[in-house]
Length: 83
Image 1 (tube, rainbow, N blue to C red):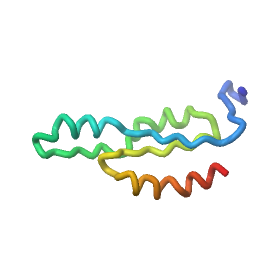
Image 2 (image 1 turned 180 degrees about the horizontal axis):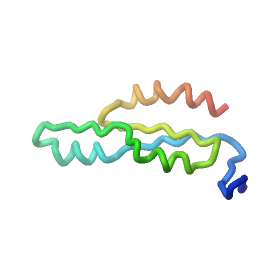
Image 3 (image 1 turned 90 degrees about the horizontal axis):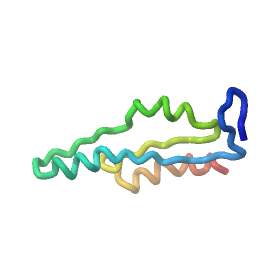
């Protein structure tokens, strides 16, 4: 459905996990040099996130910086937001 201003409007809520794959690639390329880059959350995507419809929550995740257990613990409160 389309809302005001020509933006798409959701009928519900959605949670998007934005996996930062850049640091994974860098780790593979630089692993021989014992360099593990942690790019972290990229603020360059903030504009993209703002363009998404209201009701979409984007959670960035960098697997090099944060393991799966920590990511799940950080996501659980947001999963409750969906209900």
